[in-house]
Image 1 (cartoon, rainbow, N blue to C red):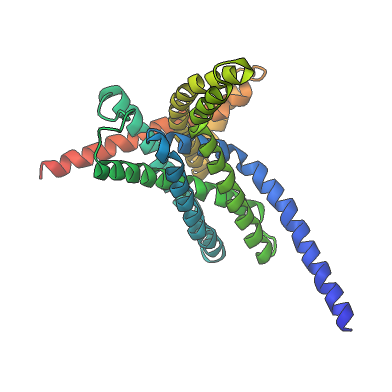
Image 2 (image 1 turned 180 degrees about the vertical axis):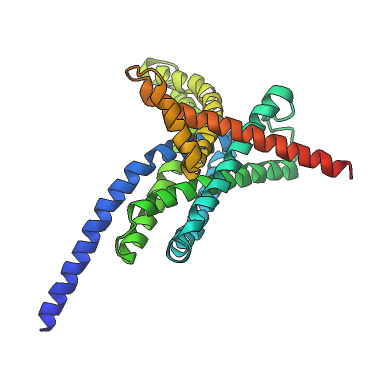
Length: 302
């Protein structure tokens, strides 16, 4: 009898693990798009620090991301069980915040092009100023990660709805860990690309394929970071706009109606919804920026 009970237990464990593996695969596919945006945003957020401090800064942000998910996974499970209607409004707030941050970056770039410039050489900053600068970068990256992590967790939660609670916990925890390791491992690789190039240059002593590869990495690194800065800002509108569109049914249906009457061009028509999300995100961000600016002026006059 004891042996039969043990076999039954092992069979139940194997069934749960099979379910976890299957649902984790489904959740990973659904969150892959957000993962790309997360990568672009975080690579942009940690750029601009001194070379010797890049990995410590990435590690600090990664630890903050793990803490975010330690909060978000239990909170999502709790909200899903006692007040599932709260998830959509909370995501909407996060989406609006992302759009606002994107609009603020665009506004500063257009109207205050030098006020937000990243220092390319921090050698003249004092130790205290350097520490403050790094902390600002870390806090900004962790804040952005919190919103993107919330979307990843909610998407993962949607894939396991109706499954046993233990399956939900295991799938969401696995997705949270794998996504964090994947994103910040790639971010670390991107920000250290130039250092790898310099290493290859020294090792090859200026000759052969390694030297050419090193030269390519060194010249590509700053261009890639500038590219990721632009992509990161666009990603704020795409992700934030996507959250808004899927949170407000009248906007979702309106966007679908617009997309349905556009000419169906091969390959291009598949991007209509994504472009629509970006436009909605940009408009929402500019609206939030205008409202907040008006509120600040109103407070200043009183």
